[in-house]
Image (cartoon, rainbow, N blue to C red):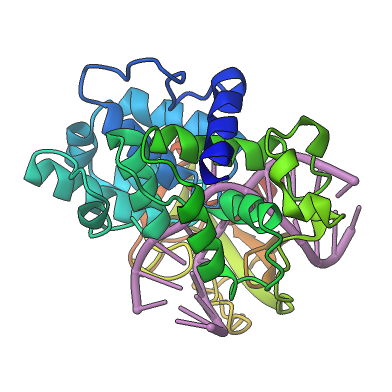
Length: 344
DNA sequence: TATGCGTGGCC
DNA sequence: TGGCCAAGCAT
């Protein structure tokens, strides 16, 4: 049965694999210029909790600008953070630079799952995925797609996240010794295109005959998930300080929310509570309106205030030319606030 | 094990 | 339209 599942799936993958910029077709040779593990790693990090559609333009931009891990390792962290702006989960960008530098120092990516797991930003999933896809190692690759497929295939009723262990055991049991990388990608393609969260297309599924979730009826209810906590609503202020065709930008603290990213000055709002309401400058402020933005764990209503012809701004920051604002690498929240201020 | 951490698309 | 969801990691 285990062999049957992986064989059916690999046959399906040979015929239906998605064509993605970071992939080679099943059976084709990877690029011979040594960039293959780099491209696999970069795509896997970008794809953490992020959709294929969102990743594509970033992957193209990164691999054009930094074609090798050595090139990325030599880049200023600031440039990488700015290039990552808009993709979210910015600790990934900080870890990306640290990882690239560690890999460049040691002369290339390690090839075992255990060594990969030691690199910054590589957890259980990414280490297994890189080991399997880039180096052909047998590894048990479990992401949200695999969890969904396996929970349905074996009709695992226990709710996530508690069900992680039995799901992993089941995934291990169906993972083949050969073509582990193709198998992992096939499971993810199946989850993304057939065994989708809503409205799974069982009639097109190569595993439907073996699927206990389908046999039990209503496979879409699996996997069962624990209820989510409600998101609090926070209020905050942001300040657009303009002078002679430039705006005052600050850099946020290295860790935590939007860590290390350029930003507008604000009043210290956070997931824990509202901002102080205190502007960073004296003077008259004009209201530019409200930005609503929902993060993973809270929603924010950000009031944007404008001061033009401002005197020298205090604290640390930089005057950023308005005609190059798109190069500042503002995360989406502050890009929205900037649009509001510029439209005013 | 629970929590903090982005964003955009979907219905 | 608001909640859900998407190739998770660090602590």
